[in-house]
Length: 84
Image (cartoon, rainbow, N blue to C red; front, side, top):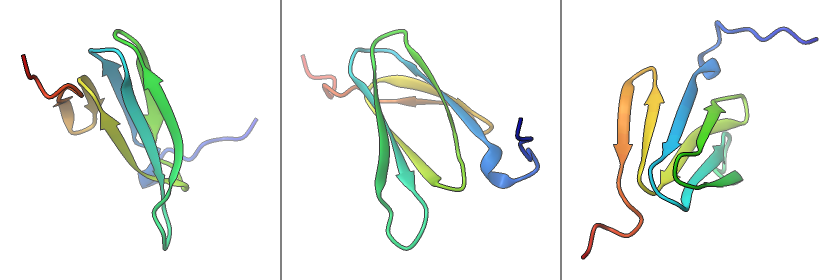
């Protein structure tokens, strides 16, 4: 079993809790060109645990959710824009 070096900066985790159906979580690559490398679609109540790695430099969340990370809890807005 490979041992993970948790002292590296890319060992940070984020937890995304979907508060509506259809929340998109998108992983973006490192390097000269930033590219999409992975997407997940979450339904209300689903949780995704993601990690920054040597390949993942950014995580984009689209849709109403709570994002838990070392910086605190961040709330993202609704995909519907809150219109009545």
